[in-house]
Image (cartoon, rainbow, N blue to C red; front, side):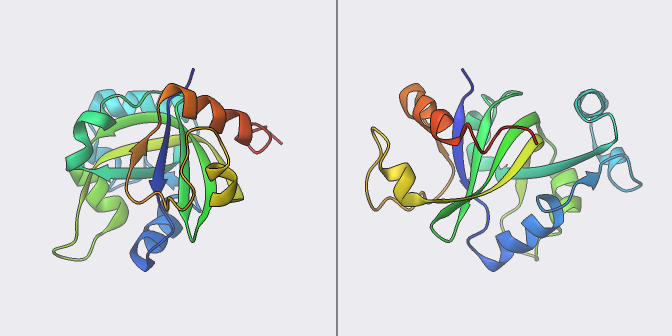
Length: 170
């Protein structure tokens, strides 16, 4: 079963700016300025998963390195903000590349920099109110899902069942 994690992505102006760059539109990772910042093995994996040379990307800070090391192709991320799941992503390739992340998101000086990056081989806009997640077994009413959170297998299964219709192709 796919691992599911929840990640704030649309809540702050900065996150929305990052999302407009790498979630709302696919990035040409083969373009000048990007490919040279990738380890050859990561570039090879991205090419295999995204043969057109384009992918959507999101990331996480270095404090999440250990958990991000567990993210695998096919895992599912709920991208949140404004008290809703606003998109659902299926992970393509997860890797660590601070220079690539800096180039993708161009953070303001002194802002937290992401070092973990993951591509999305599936991306589905959604509008699922937190109340629908809270109603699932094991979730807490009023939880605003602050910060990156990995779900246990039971919660992951419940979320996958709830979001199955949104994740269908077409």
